Image (cartoon, rainbow, N blue to C red; front, side, top):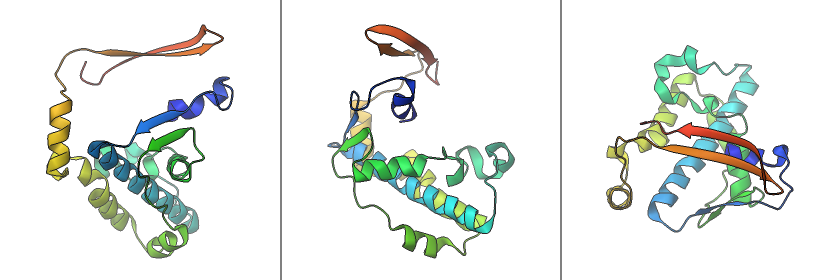
Length: 178
């Protein structure tokens, strides 16, 4: 998502690119619901920290929250990106049920008295807990297992940004298991 959003800043004319996510599969919708809830919690926690004057702490200083951190460890514009997808104003589009946009007033009222422990609990229950394989709905897990396989072998991806058919930037990435 970050790369797609950065294209305009790198010279891509508006309206020339749109990232369309196929939202017709069960596993995509499961992932989208997870991202939507993460966006909601991010929005709430950023407002909570602003109102309380609590600065988001660096991921390294919050090792007790594990490798997934807290909602405020997501990119600063994460919830705005998710809101844009839901509202249809983003260059990222989900073909499928985007669901309802969360009510910011209700969210901020509900979470204004929370402490860091309550944020951690909601984050673990609603987002991090759903990313573990034993929490994934069995039908989704079967669908994923039948379509995808991750084997410990090397891989590489290349991102090329073109302008008028010329490569203006190129980046190479290795997969995490390589």
